[in-house]
Length: 250
Image 1 (spheres, rainbow, N blue to C red):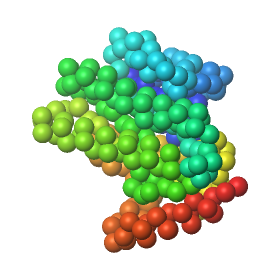
Image 2 (image 1 turned 180 degrees about the vertical axis):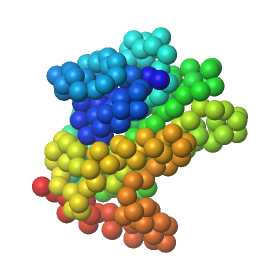
Image 3 (image 1 turned 135 degrees about the vertical axis):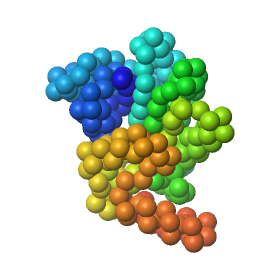
Image 4 (image 1 turned 45 degrees about the vertical axis):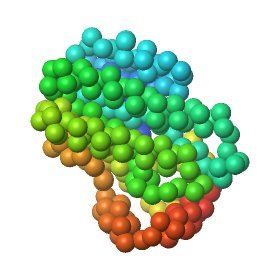
């Protein structure tokens, strides 16, 4: 098998690469930092190709697909993404456009293009990395929360389309809560609760992907939060979410 992983230079993407390689899967790793990818490549036991690419650039996702479409890819992990902290009228609009291009546009393009290929051979796995943020409104992290909601809902919709077609192609979405990665440094926040390790999340995600689970939520804390959130009004969730985000300011 062969997997394409975006955002593979750190965090969840890097550790999913390790988990899949340990399972004998060859890899194509994509990120902006080629030196990090080469370091990761050196430690992995399977064949690895590295590609330096910034998915926030206009045609990057299309270019990536054209570069690897003949590689007989079996698994696509759409992991690249980042967050921006601050009140909506204070945050930098140009950086937000890069967030939208990375978190939404690139995921949408790669999901669609590889889905067509996978349906053609009636096999393949697509795992989109979202967040438990996708289940909530996100004042002070509004663009990030909204982008992850898009990823989760898109994935759910495609899942149902595939189910009704009785397709053997899998699509699922990983929705972790806080994870100890570089996310907090990029978004300029500090998590108010202890995050899971990216190694645990990666292993859990791969196991559930191969079991064809639609929504993958690592950790009991986030599972309980999603369950009890059903019993709160939208305005209550907004207030709770705002206080949670405010505590993240570093």
